[in-house]
Image (cartoon, rainbow, N blue to C red; front, side):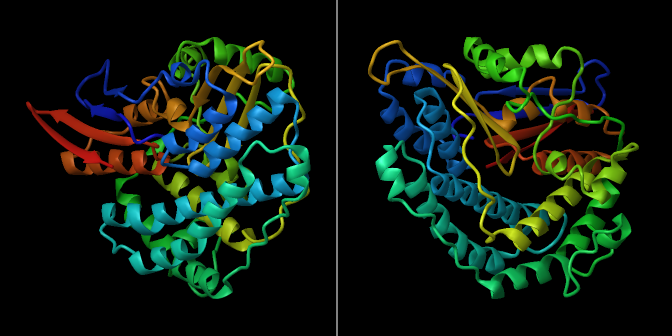
Amino acid sequence: MTAAGQLYIRLQPGDGERPVVIRSTRPRQLARLFRGKPLEEALQAIPLLFNICRGAQSVAAVRVAEQVLDRPAAQHCEQNRETLLRLEMLHEHLWKLLMDLPPSLGLALRQAEMAAAHRQLGPLIKQLRQHSCTLQASAAQAETPAIQAQPDNTLISALQCLLFGAGGVAAHCWDGLAAGPGLAGALLRALAPLDWVSAIRPEAPPALGRPAARPLLPAALLAAETPDHYIAPHLSAGSSFESGALMRMGSHPLIEAARRRPAPCLSIRLAALLLETDKLLRGIYRAPRNTTADSPAPRPACCQVETARGRLTHALSLTADAAAVVKKIVVLSPTDWHFHPQGIVARLLSEQPAAAGDRFYRGAELLIKLINPCSAYRVILAGDGAERACNYA
C-alpha cells in the first residue's frame, strides 16, 4: 500500500509452464526502518509511508500497539475507527466504479459525481484519522467523543440512482443486476464479452480471529524475513487465498449462488464490489455497533482490519526495555497475498482462455483492476515475437 516500487505482471499465453510471471520491486524491509525506534515515532511515520488506505494503515498500527501495551481504546474511539474504515472503503469503491473501470470498458468517466463524493468523504476521513488513530492515555481517550457524521442524503440518493437506477439495486438475481438501467448494469454488460468461467474457488487468508491462530500468527509473521517468506508456505499446497469484497459479500444470496459452481471470473468480482458499495451507501452513517478492539494479546501482537482491497495485517513486537521501543513491525497487505507469484491473480490469469491479443489483454487488465493492487504496476503481454506493455499508476 505504498507508492514506492511496482508490480510487473507478464502474460505469456503460449508458455505452458509459466503463462503468468509476477515480480515486485515493492519495499520488503519495513522492519529495518523502524527497528530500535520509539513506538510513538513509528506510529506517526507509518501513515506517511502509505498513500493508499492510509486510514486503515493508521487503525491497524495503533490497534496492534494498544494490544502490545495492554492499553485498550475507549469504546467511542473504536467507533470512530470503524466509521473511518467504512468511509475509506466507500471512497475507494466509488473511485474504482466511477473513475477506474469505465475507461477500460468504453464508458464515460463520472468525474462530477466522484468530485462530489470526495468533497463530503475526504474531510471526514482526514478528521477521523487525525483524532482516532493516536496512542492516547486512557484519560485523554475519555475526553474524545465519537465523531458524528451528518449524511448528505441528496448525494447518497444521487449515487444510488447513478449506480443502480431509480428503482435501486435488483440484487435478487444475476440477470436483474446486469440488466439494470444504472452504471452497474452498464459495467456488467460491457464486461461480459471479456469474461471467462473460473473453476478456482478462493478462500480467505489465515485470520486472526481463529483461536488457534491468535498466538501463532504474530510469531510466525514476525519470524519471517519478508511477507513473501510468510506467505509462500501457505501457497505451496495450491491454495487460492483472496480477500476483499468477494469474500466479505460471500453470504449474499447472489454471490453465494454463483460460487456454488464455476463462476464468471470478472463478473462475480464486479458484482461483489457493486453489492458492497450499495451496502455501504445504505448504512454508512449508521452508528457502528458497540465495539472494542481485540482483547489484549500476549506480546508479540497482531491486528487485522478490512480494507477496500482486502485484509490488512500488522504485527508488532517491542524490546524488553521499559521504554516502548520497536523490535520489529511487519505489514502484510492484501496485495502481498493476491499478487504473490503463486497467488490468486497468477492462478486466475493462467486459466484465462486463449483469445485475440486485444481481448486477452483487456480481460487480464480488468481482472487486475478488480482485484486492485495497492501499488503501481506494469502489464506486459508477450507473444508472436512482440510485446505489448502498459503502465498503471
